[in-house]
Image (cartoon, rainbow over all chains, first blue to last red; front, side, top):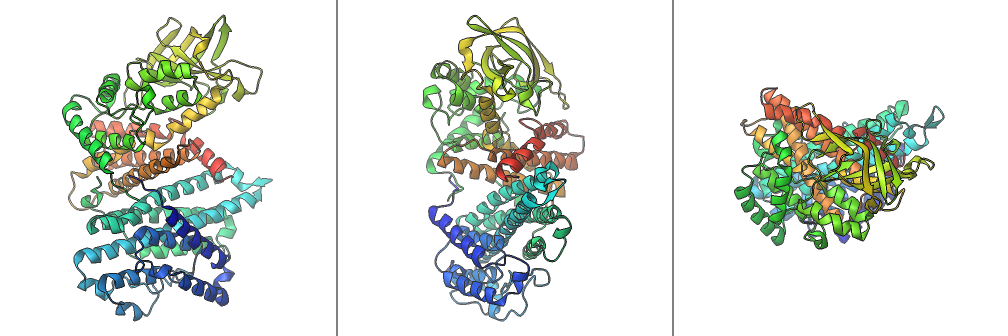
Length: 278
Length: 360
């Protein structure tokens, strides 16, 4: 039993994080900066992250990139391409259904269009052996769970930085327990999310497909609940400003709502067999 | 990365599973029966090679990785056997701050269960604000004389020794005037009485009155004034789920409650199940991180908070499933309220996370 990330996986995380920090949107206004987005698109395309599965990368590595991209609100596609890449590996040829998908899933809410190119139920799945289709589903759930964890981390960073500089009653608001406790709860929810996500990401390639789906469902439920709370906390900590369009907090929340609603897993859908942990 | 057992870990698990089948039957896992046979259970586990596995061989441990403690916790929960006695914080406290002589004298008995211990930290007037404690230790020849009142003292009714925090210097800032002592519980100057908890249990916690109790100066742990440092080591260790055998029991309770259902589950129960699974995986991650070196930092406060949320959601699930009809589940629910208080309240944990991790 050893569930630490390897040195290579940590390097991958750093590479994805620095790309997101350099070229991701640093403000709501940046979302409309097409030149920035074009540079980001070019940079992401050059990394080969979108074909990680072709290159033999595990679900853990895919989740690392998805998480860091969401943390930095990367507003060019990753989830769609990486799932198409995975499907290509399973079928032996590029999926046609992906090319023909007209609408971006979640575009009505997600200003970063993070799910562009996603096909919720690719036609190719029905032709795959059952286990392969389930494994693809486990990866899809895991990538969106990773997106949720990354967005949570980004939202918490934003709120924590704000709490250190915003002053009321003559002191930074973060020095008051009422604010400190909200942010402490958010960080703790993220820690739990990281643990449950790591297992799901590992399970994609290491556990039988049914168990991998079960692990991914548990991760998705936990991370989705945590992420919504963390983003709502981020808005609350920002006060009135948090409820304005210009504050990035709602961009994180919107991304979380899109990731939650795509391949949704609801608590009431869990059955006894889904709690079949060892 | 591997969430599974290594071949060595799997073999250990297999041996343990076999042993538990034969030996755990007569022990109760909760209530007064559990607390009163805790010492016997400790010695049985130790003798079979399943207790103190991660502690140094020199003192009776096996120098195994901390992950073996989790295997023990999981299998114990699976078998419905009593939890592993939670002594890690005392071993760590003495291991970090005690002299070689004190370690050699006390660690082996603590680990093998032949000597029972309790912890005299909290006082009626010093709960979250532990540094305000007023119990005094006054030098008298080559001894100290202890006067004061301790509370929330687990095992005080059967302990041979108590690790006591007492004030030795009133003229320095309050954190610096506290020293730690290993005090014999078998003497006239000590009176202990049980505390009855809201689930009716009386053998878990006690109150201890020290009225002229004596302790050799040689039983001071560390130097005069080092008591606060020891206390911080102890409480931060106390907060890590890897040291708390209870965490593996939550999944077991959820499965027990879920056994009565086919298909969908009540929402409270499903949520408790998701959280219990989260904690199982979280403990694995934390233990893996310890392979890089064990630290007792503020991260333990997040682990404690997660564990508290899980235990209390399992408590709520118990209410959702059986209401108040099942005495054991009702007791588990009532007991769960203590989790956000013992070992540092949830509010204190959030202060630590906000200040020391988030830098607020």
